[in-house]
Image (cartoon, rainbow, N blue to C red; front, side):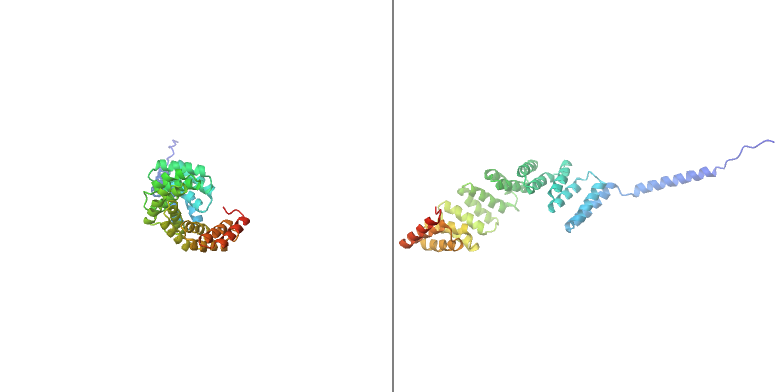
Length: 311
């Protein structure tokens, strides 16, 4: 008997090929319709920004962290996290994320690191960061203003001046920068530079508060411009009635100009607030003597000398 070769049905192979084709097509469909990780990261990032604007800082942090999980090179997400932690006064975390953003060439991060160091009271490192940021963006008035302000806090008044001058270029900063510039001149006893700078600051919109009138008035008195100086000090005293500093400068100006009755009145008011103020008591006596009450004035001067340092 002749055996015939066993016939093999082609259908199982065809079925497997068909299934494989279906799987390949489905895989291609998935790849076409899957959301790329970069797009997902961007979606989380934008959601985080909205939450940040709404003041939901914890939820915003979670979104930015999710964005970084999808794309660990997402510099803007690191920087947003840095700013959020700064708002929460978690300066160590803010600094850490800010440094990562900086290494990824996020431009605002350089000045931001200065903010972090300043908040952490590390002035030297803050100055370094602000200086580096300004070197990269020489026309950035806001960085210049921060740098000037920090030098001023460190009492490096001469170093602050050129940066305040740079800040004058920005209209939103101009008035305050000019006022602070005037104060630097004032503190360096450059009254010729201070007086016009104070006036210009007011012209640019700086509020004329008690500090403004005090500094301008004292500047003018140091230039022997007693008429305008006294007028401005009087304005300061109206706004800040019991400010001993203003009262003493104004009373002294009255005395020097021979306005003894006004000086007497003001020295008396100072002594109501500070009964043991030997200097004010002595000057009251001198003012009374100048006003014709010699014996009474001499007696008060003697009392002041017995009380303490009346120089």
